[in-house]
Amino acid sequence: MRFNARSKRPGSEIDLTALWVNPIRKTLQVLHRFEDAALIAMFSAALGLALLQIVLRNGFDMGFLWLESLLKIQVLWLALQGAMIGAREAKHIRIDLLMRWLPTAIADALARALSLFSCLICGLGAYAGSELVAFERMDGLMAFGSVPIWLCQLILPLAFGVMAIRFGIQVMFPVS
Image (tube, rainbow, N blue to C red):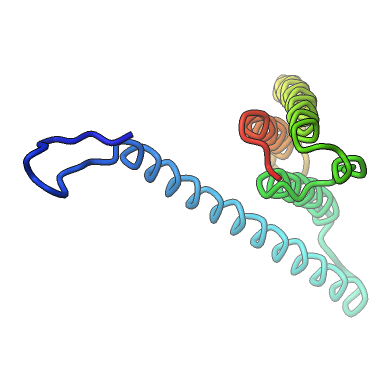
């Protein structure tokens, strides 16, 4: 959509779509970079801590008691961060055997239906995750040290919520 502020001046057209699309695109790029950096940082920390634990156990007959629990939680976070990025880039696990041979219109409709189904399932996962976090917060249990278990489980509603939004967007704008 173009708006001509003054028709007498050449080149005075303003692209109204660019006024709101570009800031959204830049914001999404920043969020995607943050997501990627968080995944890299979590993976590096998990790898470093696991190696430290191995060296301490095998070399010095000692180790940190809480580290095993932390590493299990980091694996959960890594898996869900990877799933969020997979959904973002439409490189998640999917079965598209029939899509290659179907006519384009039917394949597009099927892709939208599958994205809607994924959106609903992830929405249910986000709801269940938020319920779990709420119950664990009420219980007041600790994961390790003074870190509450509900804090470690926050990735569940967050990741499933983000994936639900991304699949919802793919319903409207299918990825080929």
